[in-house]
Length: 137
Image 1 (tube, rainbow, N blue to C red):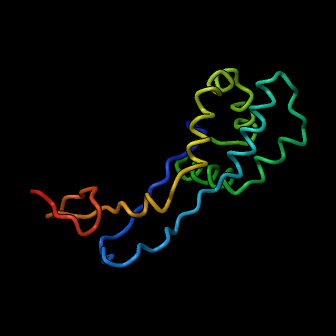
Image 2 (cartoon, rainbow, N blue to C red):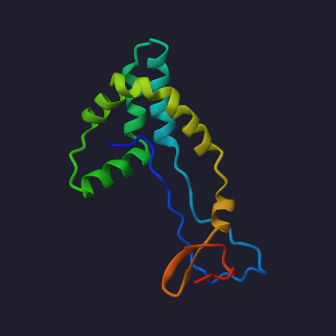
């Protein structure tokens, strides 16, 4: 629960022939929990009470389920009621103006461009370079 949104790592190998078209990225950004929680925060931002029915939405999303599984796997305490309290916190509401631009950027991310930048290894060191480029040691 330390972050509202998590970073996505795209790990690909370096065996792709640079002369061939890049394969489509095998990454999907799941926004269901993000959309549900920003909807709740938007209602709070304009001073509206969040209807009880709105709380069903975030807890039934794939994104929330994955977040909960990850937190529990790391043996961190995580409950629906604690997440609800997090969404109702004044601290999070105060950060909403900084969070919304990040939400917009995540919505516009180009995964094809990210997949084109592949990690290559030079003499056992991971280098962030396009495949086919040379490594300066």
